[in-house]
Length: 325
Image (cartoon, rainbow, N blue to C red):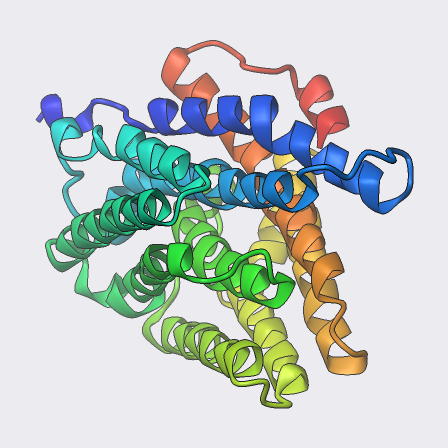
């Protein structure tokens, strides 16, 4: 039993944060500087922009949600967690795949794509096995999101994520939905919120999966369905908040860094959804709003709280964490 409960998230998160701080964020800042005329040197612009995207999507966001799912997935699904040796090798495998993907040689990049896909398919297998051995009432509202999320991340290396609509599809369908699935444990345990009942869970899952399907049609077939996608995305967030009783739980909890992070997370997601309904999609803008406003905000809040829980030490003071968020 002890071997199955050895924490693994910190290795995934550590690799994610180092890659983001040393590669992803600096390159992103440079790309922004070029676009806004702060830097005139545009040599290797496309290559460095591609590396920025690859690192952020597959390492920073990809490894964070992998660690989050592996650590809290068993609790939220009601199953037994995988043994650490079954999953610990995935993060260096994906790092290797990302490294190969960044090398400008077609055959090497294909090998990198295969490795990234294999790592995410193994994560899919682990989560499905955990789900099938857990609480069957949680298969629809939780396991279905893990499944679609890791399927999208497994397919993502073969997509042109330098195209903003495709990058947005990967972030919403792959990363954001996994955060919503794994985050149910945090919301239930820390905020004393509810869990999905059978009907509420079914409605939430249907709207979430429908948003993925319609968003996919919008992005990959150029169908004029962005307004429908926005409505379904808004319904996904609203049903999540409503059926879990998030707002009463936030009010009862009071002013904390986690509450602020959750408010920002849901608020920005709703702003994105309604922007698709009432305006033409500004894909590059909503990619960064989702990535920074929603997902990165939750990464900061969740990582600090979970690290503090397992280490027995406060990772950041409440004041510092609130200011950072």
